[in-house]
Image (tube, rainbow, N blue to C red):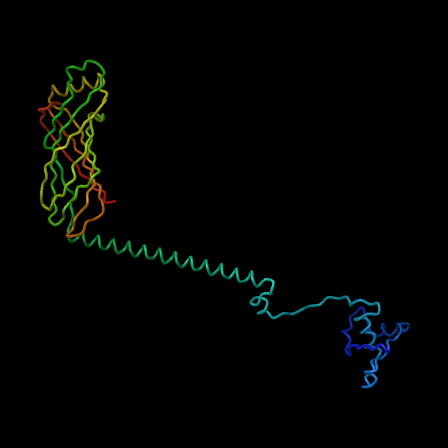
Length: 294
């Protein structure tokens, strides 16, 4: 049976290392038989084509060595990833889109906060110009003291003082009411020593009104040294015992039907009484009010 093979009509391009002359010079190699199909169509292969086909397709020869330059369009290099990198490319583009979305959301949120702050500032300025709010004023009306008998204390000892303090609160605003909330604190000091603590009652004060109320302050285990006792005795003989009263109270402002957030008011009073006794009288008083809106 005749071996029929089909060889390519065109040979690979000649390189500098292999030429047609060298291929033709090797005449000892046996020529492959020409198939009957080529004989019928009258297509006999030339010796050059045959030598090139030997180099490329067998007969003991390998592919021609050399360097090949493959040119790829630029748009395909940057825009069309190879199949093995297509999945990575999709993940990378999704991450970039997600980051842009996060930045956009953050910018919108920050812009919304700025707009809300601006609106609140404008509203507060308008309310301030229209209503002109004023802080309430306080005064100490009377101070009565129990549990402090200086004549029986010879050396360092502990005392349990009880103060009954009457205060007067005045709301000077014409269109603003004041709610005195729970959580107030009042303290009385003498020469830096905290003698007693107490609380103020919770109540509502209408515009242009005054409220007088009493509160009880107690102290326990207050250490009174001999020097402090001697100082108090001297001050009582002079009829001038200085006390410092510190008041902290949370309030809410009522404007029409609107009640604001909690505002902390601090009242600092310097009061002088003639003695630490039940019949004590107020000699002088001076109070200073400080309001903290936040």
